[in-house]
Amino acid sequence: MVIDFHTHIFTDALAPKAREVLIKNAGNAYTHCTDMTKGGLLAYMDAHGIDKSVVLPIVTKQHQTVTINEWARSICDDRITAFGSIFPHTDDYKRDIDLVCSLGLKGIKLHPEYQYFDVDDEHMMPIYEYALKKGLMIVWHAGYDPIGTPPYRSNPAMFAYVADRMQGGVMIAAHLGGQSQWEDVLRNLVGKNIYLDTSMASKFCPRELFEQIVKAHGADNVLFASDSPWSEAGVEVERLKSYDFTDEEKEMIFHGNAERLLGLAE
Image 1 (cartoon, rainbow, N blue to C red):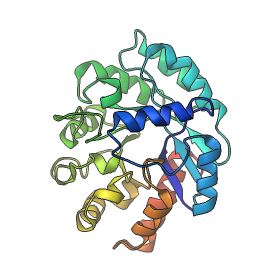
Image 2 (image 1 turned 90 degrees about the horizontal axis):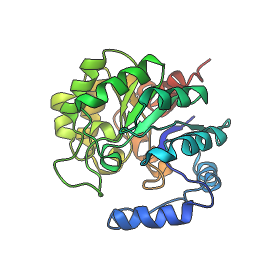
Image 3 (image 1 turned 90 degrees about the vertical axis):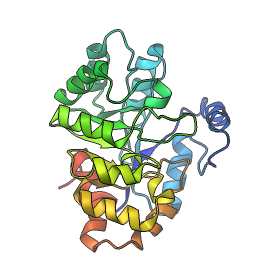
Image 4 (image 1 turned 180 degrees about the vertical axis):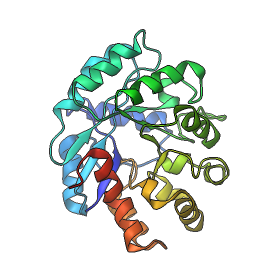
């Protein structure tokens, strides 16, 4: 089984425009492997042996909160698990987090560059604490993003600080803890109470460094992910199969850890 813990789609009506804008804003840094609809993602999954995917929407304006989270709930089925999202600069974070919980969504996605906040900003701490207290997982974009400019609003030291502050709950730093910041992940983040997903890192992080990070952090704290449509899950699966991990470690990365977090394990 393979579970892709990091994908992005939009409504059928919005997907063409969203795809165009995202690619333009990213300076054509990435190509896309799906049309960014649910149907397109499912077709890719079927063609490349991906059993389940986690969809991570991002609320970038306050007025989107209800619509996006209700849509996220509507697309959930036996193949798709969607998380919710909240706007970090909301006028009532408890109301918005309670909405996510009421819809039965399992977590929230936050993106420091798109949502304009620093991961370790003090005003974010009550938001994290409340979300985790309510049983939600938190997934953050981590590190470099083509729409941002250095210094980026997240880095491994920031995530280490947050993990120490929260001291509990399921926290996930995407892109192996910090896209293009992997030496800092080794120095500052491995061993902390935070999961790392493999999105984009399995494409860009040097193999030896990737293996070193996973072994130091523990394969039981790593989740396979692609960041679809910007990277191909099928290609990433084949790449990771060739890496120097035991069969047990690969099973944990590809599906075991995700099944446990999503409540799918028997």
